[in-house]
Length: 148
Image (tube, rainbow, N blue to C red; front, side, top):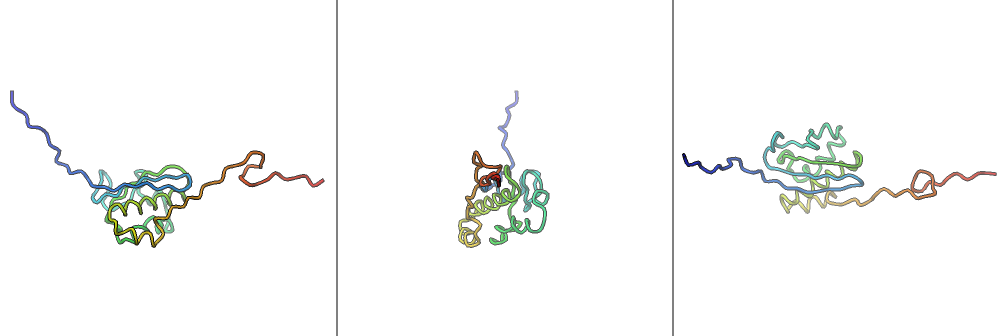
C-alpha cells in the first residue's frame, strides 16, 4: 500500500470586505474583493448575480451607485458582489450605496472622511408610516364626510 500525500489547496482565498446597508424596506449585503470572484469579472459590479446595469438601468442610477467609488478614486479596482432584497428600486439603490461606502471604509479607513463629506455614510432612517384603523386606505387620509 502506497503512502498518500495530504492534499493541499492551491487556490488562495480572496480577501474581501463585507458590509450591510438598509433603507426603507430594502436591505443590501455587499462584498468588495480585490480580485475576480468565481465567475465574476474583476472590477465589475453584480447585484443578485446579475450585472448591475441590468438591475439598476439608466445613467442617473449609474451615477448614484458609482458615487462612492468615484469619490474615493477606486472605480474598477474592486469586484463588487451584492445581495439585495426587499423594497423598491429607490430603497434598494440607497441600501446598496450605503453598504458600498461602509465596505470601502473597512477596506481603507482613510476613505471615511471623504465619504462622510460626500454624505454617503449618512443613514436615512425614514420609514413608511403605518396605516391607522378607521381611516381610509392611507396613513393619514380620512373618509369623506357627508355634506348634508
